[in-house]
Length: 311
Image (cartoon, rainbow, N blue to C red; front, side, top):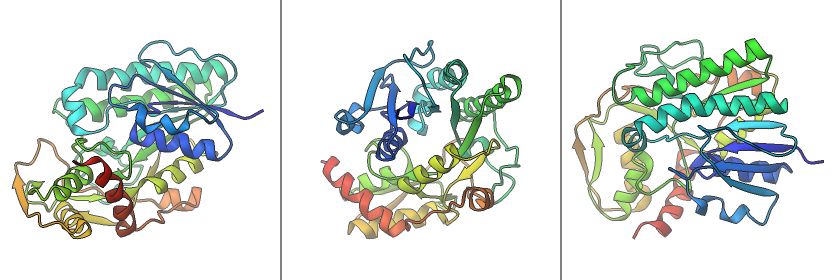
């Protein structure tokens, strides 16, 4: 019998790519999503495969009939626009949703994988960020609803491992981009591509010297699956260590789109991290993982997708 995987947040950007990759590897996938920020268009092409979609809010009890081998908890608003507009829902899915997903894994004797984030490091005082770093987070700032939801989710995941003996994994995801991101997502890459394709001014917040590290979606999915199948229980950074300023990524996108756009500057959002770069020593040595897709190649694929979406 095929192994069965439940993925919460399956209709989202990362969740849909993860569902597709696991189907390609011969798993049966049950995707759960309330479509708050997800989109059925992301998974419509999976319906004729060994994929089942369940529309459900995972902050409520999750019922899945039959055996389950893995539970991958990806449900959460993930862009600043989303979690600033949906602060309570973001906190609820990080707390109650994680609790319900862990409860499903415990009931089924399944392995559990939590989608955490580099945002648990906050505006870091350590650079690059190792998994041993505890972070510098403002719990009552506007970004705190997301940062603290994920930090709580990590704490609960570890509590289930220690108290119930559940086999749990935690992946700390750094900035990821690729097809199926929403045009109005609010994150840097889709915002810049959308503006450049429309020949609008490309808006860089702050002076543009803040840094990020961008991972192409296929590299991220490869790292997640390696972690899922590993014996590792400690958190692992999955991200591309190539660090760039926000202005550099904006200029790269303008060049790649052949746009006539100019860069303009807007006010820096509250608590926006000044630097972000993963230390991936743990992923390299323990999972044999490192990113393969160059930024230039990844942008070509992503821009092609956005050309079909941007009017």
